[in-house]
Image (cartoon, rainbow, N blue to C red):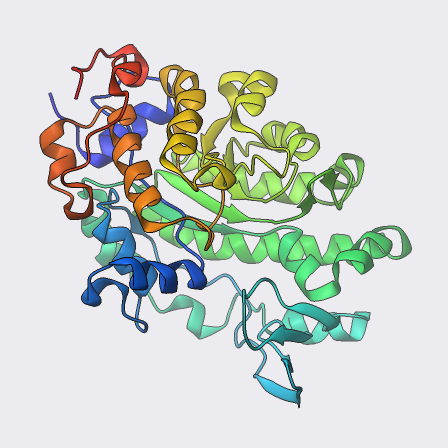
Amino acid sequence: MALTHRERFRRLMHYQTVDRGIHWDFGFLEETMERWAQEGLPEEVGAPGGDRMGRISRYFGVDPTMHVPVHIGLNPGFEYELIEDRERTVVYRNGDGCIVEEAKEGQRTIPHVIEPGLKTREDWLKYKERLNPDDPARHQWDYAALADQYNKADVPVIISCGAYMGWLRNWIGAAEIGLLCYDDPELMSEMVNHLCDLFIAMLEPALHHIEVDLAWGWEDICFNNGPLISPKLWRQLVYEPQKRVFDVLRQHGCDIILTDCDGNIFALQEVWIEIGLNGAFPCEVNGNSDPIELRKKFGRELRIFGGVNKQKMRTREQVLAELIRLTPLLEDGAFIPFCDHRVPEYVPLDAYRYYEREKLAMLGFSQEEAEAIEPLRGITPTQSSVFTRGIGGVVRPVL
């Protein structure tokens, strides 16, 4: 029997058999979308403007989700302020209150921070005003009225659950936050607790009415050789307030909680699992968070999202080898494979189309299901027989 998208997600995340896997992605760099527009994306899909990333995802047939609206960030954000227009870069104050420098042309990565916005306790008071849980803008939704729409949905329902060090790292600076943990741990603790109080105040009204399947957070607090904040400091400063938020989620039936963290997450993931954070994303292979190694280390306590090595998506041969490598994770369960960050500009459209078609074969999609997705028509999986076992041990026919 075919499952709904919601039933499939719930069963997959609890290591139960499913009819097929889940088809998600993590989006694409601007340069990638520009390249693909030149390589044959239909004009209505690849043209600049609007939600181009969303259009491309839908074009490739990703499985749908719904997101519960919550406002947990800065409100208002800091106003854009042009500081200096240089020959190749522009310097400006961003929405986080930091002065940054960004390239005008070429690949756009994370802007270089020249001056963080949060440097003193007085600065924190300015941020705290923008993190007021009583702000009317944070209470604009009637969750009781929205309940039927979400609770009767046949797709996974997702809610944002915030950042506990990641946002502070953005506001304070990558080097400065490590120093502040030692120089003024009381201030660090105050900031973390205030964020957690805000998250709980925003989440509880929604969770009271709406059944949520997945809570999604963000950190980006790791390099390729480990975290900016040691596990010891995380336990001292973040563990208890973060656990308060996760306890609220679980009390309302949401037991799948992930955070988006690039880099090598192994040291922190051990602490996170104790707190209740049991989902890893995007599992950057070259950031030393290979999904196979994560599963070896943390077993079935960890749900894994992403993990397809973006550097192995340049050719069809690389794509096939990488997907075959990840097949044991699919057979084990609680794994949703997609690119381990935004798809980079060196991935040709042809290789990506092949990747998506071969991935769907691995996920157990039928020929008819795959052919219903326009850009995948006419592509035959190269060695689909290696994927015949399918998700959760369910035998699938050779496509």
